[in-house]
Image 1 (cartoon, one colour):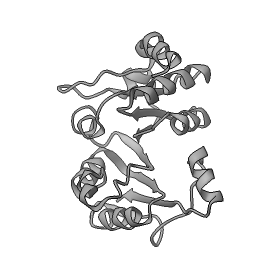
Image 2 (cartoon, rainbow, N blue to C red; image 1 turned 90 degrees about the vertical axis):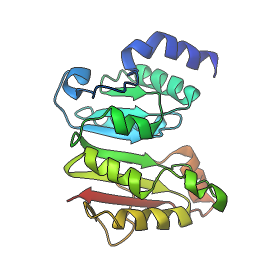
Image 3 (cartoon, rainbow, N blue to C red; image 1 turned 180 degrees about the vertical axis):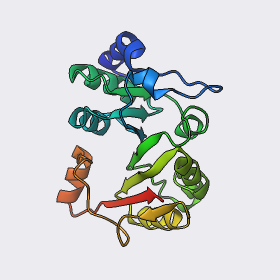
Image 4 (cartoon, one colour; image 1 turned 45 degrees about the vertical axis):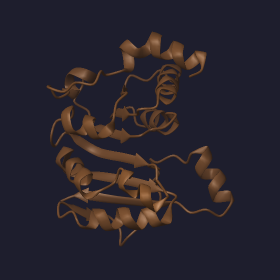
Length: 208
């Protein structure tokens, strides 16, 4: 971690960080002091996308989950520099957070942008997106809430699409993949890849 990231965690942790808790669910009205729609971003990396989305939609609440300390530190600094009050961060494993901390039918949307593809076949079992995890996410979504996953790994995109299609509580918002919606910013990494001819696949399913 850089000194700036360390300082951000020390000075801003009380303001933005939500401690992991096993035995009680978050109350979003208490956390944000409003009843605005709440969205979850899983694995926000260095925080750019999460902060940009929160800044663009001040009428929404956002919770970001990330295990990488430097990314958490940077996200806190970006949030403070942007003067945000509608974002909170949980520094913990996303599987445990979704299992223990979030109330059922409480989220308007879930974003998972560029999850680790674990490209080697022997590592595929480490991939985040699987039937069990998707089922858990559907329990957290409100009726008509959406799950949006984006990846730049074609084989993983096909696997994700097939996995979501198997869930009877979700319906695709497109025939297969969809165009990038306006609320998802493009990252520097993504723009660099697009210039090189790489492709990004957006997958959005809605709870039915």
